[in-house]
Length: 134
Image (cartoon, rainbow, N blue to C red; front, side, top):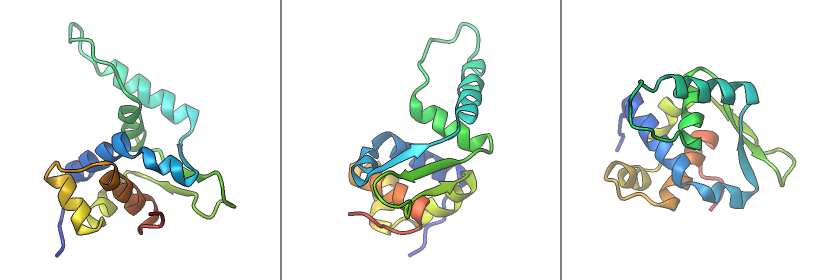
């Protein structure tokens, strides 16, 4: 079975995975970005708020998604190995690869029955195009 997602859907499931995918750190990996890209993304989000709008905080994952949307990269850095698992992605990879997540996990995300395992699998699918860990 093949599932085709819109770019918006792919971003939604990837965003949820960023929020719930703390397991990635158990593999000795961290998500990295340039300070310049992060600062620009955060400022863009702050500037996009409308005057008088209820004050909502901008979370870390919001900024990471904006980094991608503005054309910059996110990187997974392999801190424990020899860099074998260091990979960079753009928003294009998110759009192409989320839908290639193993069907069981993708359906859990679509049906809003996702958990940390689902998030982990989606993140690995996007960054590595495979399930490397776990």
